[in-house]
Image (cartoon, rainbow, N blue to C red):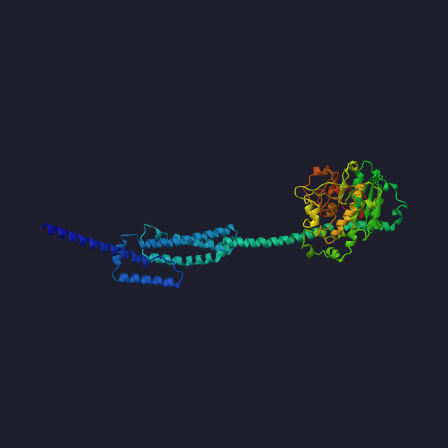
Length: 561
């Protein structure tokens, strides 16, 4: 009997356990079923809306079938699916509001406050935030929630989220970093192209401003020439040249220029600072067109006893195309085309060498410096001065320098890698590469002391002719007189102390006044010549103090002090 009771109790327990298992399974089934049919989705298409309607109808059918009570009873055992659904919708709205706010902030950082995109993003982020605030009671964990309110919340946010998605997709290209980087690179490239063109055009304009003759200088030359024609007897040369012009015991200077005002400043400054002016002889060489103006300028006043010779280079009969390579080369059509087709479009193709495409290099005045021994056969030493220099102290100490057998005394201009031979010559040419050191230090024309006896001994003029003939097609160096000078006097140049010759007053505004004041000669090399409007004002008084403003012809041409 006891055994029978124990078995009946065991069977009853098994039945209760089996029924409990079935109940748990049913509960799990009903929990999964509503969460699937009522999952929160923000539909963007009609198909999603149909699916939502279908889920709704299924839910209604279940309710009509008597399952509603069972479902709610089972749901009460676990998390509320409506609450999870509302939370997911809230999260989607918050995420889109954050993205819209980020795009609006990025637009403001890009200084696009006035753009439509910045305003729309800011407004969208604000609307989504206000929408969440309006449904805050629904999202309160302590508040009761029903499916109708959740559906109303979903319908309310669907349009805003769709607008946010469209706006973000439309603005993605604009705000994409890689795309903006590429656009920025394209913009930088285009701006660099424009800058390069502007620099070339500016360099060409600067060249025109630097090489054109100012109206006042043209006026001065015309006034002086008018005086020469009106009174020819006053300016006639003496029948026999004064002996001082060939006296090797005096201090001789060579000045080659077609600028009457510039040449007068050189001569005025040299005489003013000379201790014994009557021992100084100035050989001024110009062209035939400016000879009359030069004669009037330099014979209208006494230069404290200094001796002045004024001649035209055409009077030197040995300067002809059969002897001078430059004159022979100038007869070639190719070289004439190189010079005289110096148009803007040609200049901007090669802005580096644009300054060499200047017809001034046609003038023999630039090449006379290579013929000093033949021009002054009785002299032993001579000081060459450019017409854009100013003498600031007595220069007779140069004649006391021991030249050590060298021909050319000059101030070296190299520092670091600048002004080395490699910058002036084509070292890809085998002949240049074989004969010269690319790191050799360059020097400057402007103030050069020449030992004419050593020149004749070294046959420097013949060396100049040799290299000039080889460079007819400009393959060894570009045009100018400094490269052939560096070649001609390659191993025969004696470096002078830098205080003898300070350069750069025509292009370098950072030269210290202490350095200038200690210099024997200051050189306005560069485009900003002191007689031009583009001259640097801080250096201009160094030059204007030697202009003859008291001269009637200077006053007539409005040359301001």
